[in-house]
Length: 233
Image (cartoon, rainbow, N blue to C red; front, side, top):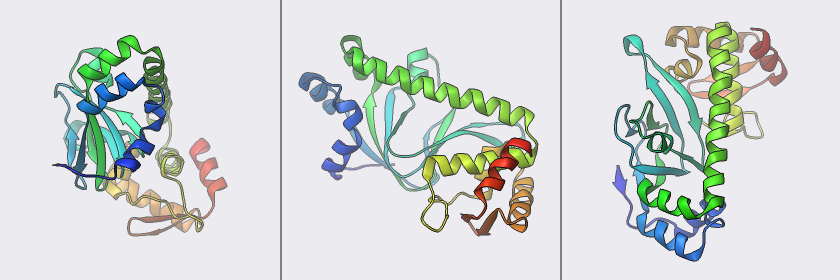
């Protein structure tokens, strides 16, 4: 973790525009005094399970995963984040330790605010409060849908859904290549399966013409068939 003394301030302002437009000048100045810009290396931990939350985190560049450690050293990725998304604040509002951990998928830049200062502004700013209520509601919907997927779908359906989720979050380029490089271990954690099962199922999808896989690069060849596999296994 590195605190950056200088980072493209205009880029940060653009990134935070959805929130900044809800703030009065006084509110904006208060949060600006609370803010710091931090750079995380690839795979570096941002926060751990059971730590006490103190910060509102905003990803402005890079990719982040939210996950929980499970039995036997396996972990389950709850969701993945892209710029610009806020996270890390639910536990503070619930007055409990973190029940998840967060780490950088790749080198990432975050803006971090002290939650105590954010809450002061929320107490007098209904627009900001409504914004974070909506963010929490979206996250809850994602969690509810994943519960059904992870407990009821066959491994093929789970992996297909995980791949489609990555497309939804990070997108693909003009050639159909996923705009993120995900390790087999992380793919397995996102699909709630062993790494060996993830590797084998990815190979099956490639053999069936749905994907082309080269290392961590994934090209989507037949999206319709992958969507059917997500639904029916």
